[in-house]
Image: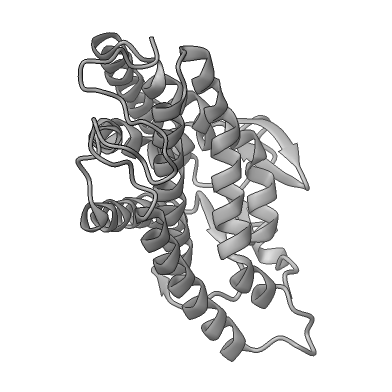
Length: 280
C-alpha cells in the first residue's frame, strides 16, 4: 500500500478555497503575532514570538510528514500556470505557502493562551487534557474544511474518517501541541537569557516528529504494508493503538508540568519567583 492513486494526483485544486485558506490563515497569524508581541513586551520575554516563529520555520519539513501520512496537496492540471500558491516541492509533493501559517495556528496557539499559566505552575493534569481536547477539535475543524473542499487530502486507507479527514491525525496533532507546549515551557523555566529560548527551534521538530513518527509509528506502518500483508483490520488496530499511545503520552507529559512558582522541581531545579525577570 502507500501508492498514490492516479485520480488523487490528477484531482483539481479548488482555487477559491485555496485563496480562502491562504489569506484567512495569514490574517489569523498576523493577529497571533501582534498578540504575541504585546505579551512579549508586557512580560519581558521573547517566548511567545519565538514559539510562533519556531512553528512556522518547522513547516519546511512538512514534506516528510506528507510522505509518511499519505497527504497530498492538490495542484492545477488544466494548464493554468502558477495557479497554486507554492514556494517549493519536495518528494514530489508541491507545498502551498499556507502550511507555514497553518503550523503557527495549529501548533503555537497553546503557548499563547496557556504558556504563562503553565510557566507559573497553575495548570494541572485535567487542564492539560482540556488543552489536548481543544486542540484536537481545532485540528479537526481546520482540516475537515481543507480535505472537504478540494484543497488537499489524506489518500491512505485510513479508518475512522470524519468527512474525508482521519480522526487519528487530529489526535496526533493535539498530542504534538501538548508535548511542544510542555517542553517549550520547561525550557523557558530553565534558561536565564533570551538567547536560551532560541532552543525552541530545536524543541519543535523534536516533539513534532517524536509525536507523529514515534507515537504514530503503528498507523504509518499499517498504512504502508505491502499488498500481501495489508489488512484493513490492522489499520483499525493501529489506529486504536495510536490513539491509546497519545492518551498515555499526554498523561506522561502531565508529570512534567511545572510546579507553582517558589517551589522546587522534581529534578532539583529551582522554580522562578513571581517577581523574577523572565528571560530578560
